[in-house]
Length: 124
Image 1 (tube, helix red, strand yellow):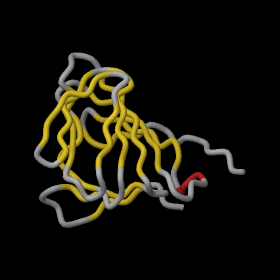
Image 2 (cartoon, one colour; image 1 turned 90 degrees about the horizontal axis):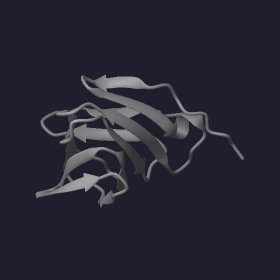
Image 3 (cartoon, one colour; image 1 turned 180 degrees about the horizontal axis):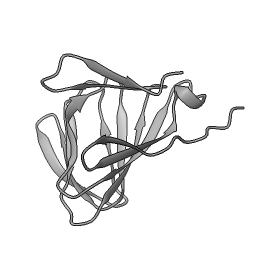
Image 4 (tube, helix red, strand yellow; image 1 turned 90 degrees about the vertical axis):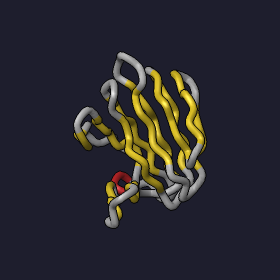
């Protein structure tokens, strides 16, 4: 058994801090879990992953989109994002949005809409 030690918070873009909880970098083989703190008016631009994702709001309010469907997500609510679905979210509240994400992969890999490169983080 391996004990996963979370990473430090890191700034991903203006208004968004991320902390890796579980990934290949600390011993995971099939899951990547992280949390984000998102300032009001910011969020995650449209992107997709090759694997399924579960996104849970721990506190705050968000507008989430998956493909062409937009919906609110509030504290205690989750959504499942199918693999390869275009998705993203914005903090629509006045307080910091705190989200928890789980990907069915041992590392984080993302393709952002309008960019050709694939971003990968937290590999072993």
